[in-house]
Image (cartoon, rainbow, N blue to C red; front, side):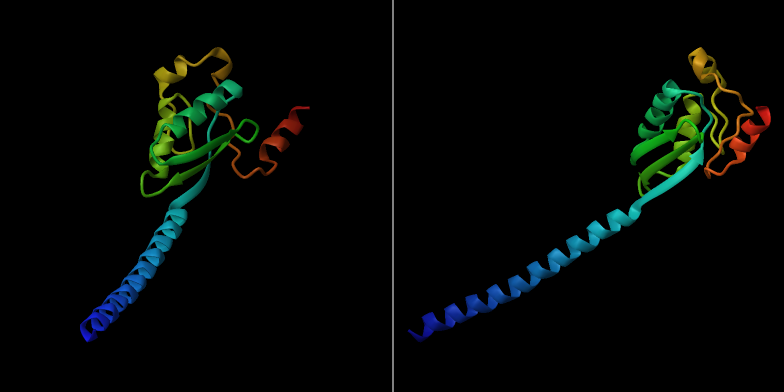
Length: 146
């Protein structure tokens, strides 16, 4: 009888240590999830373009980069908002992907061959303002034209 009681106590003690280990594992998992959230980087930069067709091409190019979670190009501001995992890609890779589709970004000129193949309505002015801040620079410019 004494042997049986001892073995039960030993199992109970093992059960307690495994519970502690499980608790630690849960904490580790939580910290990994938090670091994944921190790794998501939001970035905005200027991209030249004209219309809704441009928007589709520019966003498709940005989204084709591995690690990009979302891309949204603003037709009026000539600006793209990109959310990406900075452990999988970086800003320059996204700039290059957009430029390869024919569109100028702040840092990389659009591919000339790709630009020539864009529909006529998408062939933008290479001197166009890229207004990232949403300030009234381009609006002031348009006010002078009126």
